[in-house]
Length: 122
Image (cartoon, rainbow, N blue to C red; front, top):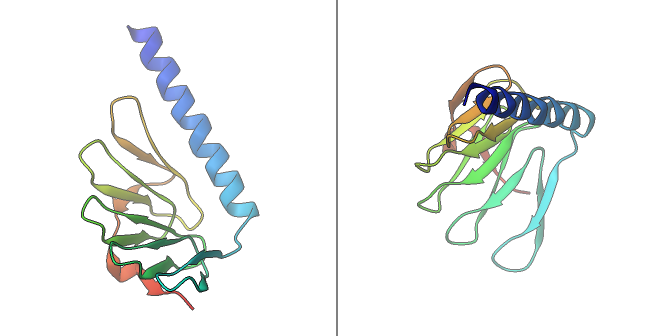
């Protein structure tokens, strides 16, 4: 059992490192279509809410829709745990991944995603 736990931790760390490398090399904004079919963009990752309105994170940040359809953003990239709680890396461009136990692991520390970290898409 211990060997499996070590392998899982190693896999999560590798994913976080890969996400950090990709996130720091590609700090381009994200563009998606809104509820009217128009392409809108933001400085960071974008997501649409339950009504089709698009919200984006700041540069290097993540945006993800929670289990209720509300878009929440973080300073770094985000992931949802097995209970639907959205957690994000505290570092811009930092990765977040869900481990085999359903817990979110982040580069740096994890913090709660919040709508206040989001901005309307342009």
